[in-house]
Length: 484
Ligand code: ADP
Image (cartoon, rainbow, N blue to C red; front, side, top):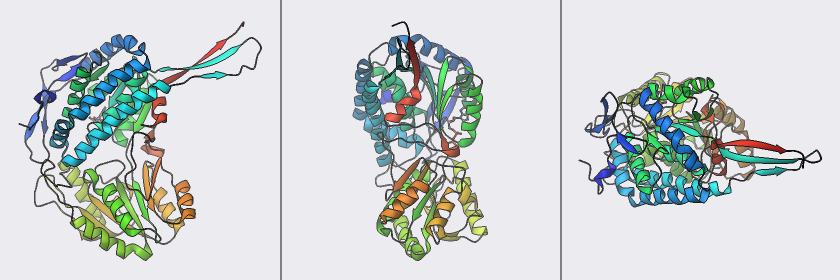
């Protein structure tokens, strides 16, 4: 049993129309703790029929929620936000148990995730329309912004809570109901959020959490004409397929997909700050975030020094069960993730890369992996083109600024990029030249509820967080009034 103060936060049923329910079939799926291999519990294996039921419930509940004022919705959401923070410890324990990340990172995610609820509840009060000066006598032209309607949200396992609040908060705040399908590895964080939403008084049908068969649930979400918007965070492959599925009913889509983040360190950088940034950006969540540095591009003059200093820092990372004190790197999510990391290392070494530290499965066994650095990495290796999603820092070497930009942009992805330089001219040139949705300059952690998160190219469509994040859940309606 997990040491929760409030055991009612541990829910093993889905939340549909304000009720805790099982799958029609009675079938369940098992959820395990990646650090121990122990079974934590089960959740219902739902499919298309239950999804359709949730969408119908959302449709029935929609009008009453939409017709509240933004301030009334904000008050209910504030209650939800407060409950999340009051239960931060329990939520963090649940998250670490199902996801593996160290407890401190889970607590950080609870704060970060809750912040989207606070931000959007306030921001929705400022959804202004427009009055356009008419170009004909006797007319008035007005623009309204209205809630788009039912939102389907499909979320991944690497941020079991924040990926949900980042989608649900703007949707709810502007008046949309949501139907959520969390990742099957991490459903308990999502269900605990639903329990707190219920206690906060978010009406039945406005938040629904379905667990189970991704293909069946996603199939109904994308085919059902009542769903007006799909917001997905996950792999590029599944994102592309969901986008195609949404074409049938022309849904608005937001996609937050894979990345291949470059982390560039120029000769003129503050190397010690760059090491701190690299550790945070690369090894956070054991390298399993879509904005984790995937390629470290280091200018030749500081290459060896950077490699040595990074190795000192990496060797200090403590690996273990995230529920234990002072752990900095937990297990990877599953064996498939371990095999991908191993394959990337093997491929790099076979093509001439050198292991500076780490490089193999950790003595703790299971899905624990040693924090790893690879040097002498080149663009013909898999790590250059694919997202490793693990604790491996491959160090590439470059000579000139132009070469660094060319290498950084040589990918179909365009989510986050980072670079370190003290030269103000270079800072502007490189920031403008990088083909990415987000650029960290002398910073390794950039995500916050007040700034727009999202990618370009094949990393996605739309932005989450910030004033821009509201737009994805609104439709623009133009009123042309004549005869005045
Ligand atoms: P990851 O590699 O991070 O697991 P996925 O894209 O497979 O990324 O998963 C992200 C989310 O998408 C999860 O909630 C998963 O269950 C869901 N998912 C996976 N396959 C499908 C599908 N065919 N249709 C809808 N959702 C899916």
